[in-house]
Length: 110
Image (cartoon, rainbow, N blue to C red; front, side, top):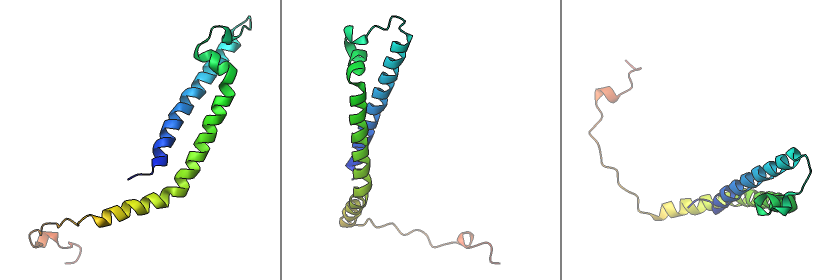
């Protein structure tokens, strides 16, 4: 079993990238608007990021920090757990092959 913090990191990381992209788009729209009108009047996602964008990004960045620390600190635990699970499984017996031939020997020793 892999570390569940990695899965959470992937999800929160993708959400953070999408949020950061949305925040940049909102900023560009505000800079291009010569009248300086607010995006909040129109509603929608850009309005949400105009009002709460920094808070959203800060919360996501905090989650990324917590999940990263969690992944790093619990990695040994999940590795030991995975190794313990492998030891409990019965070992599969490899079939014996043909005896080695002369071509299998080391050719550097004449």
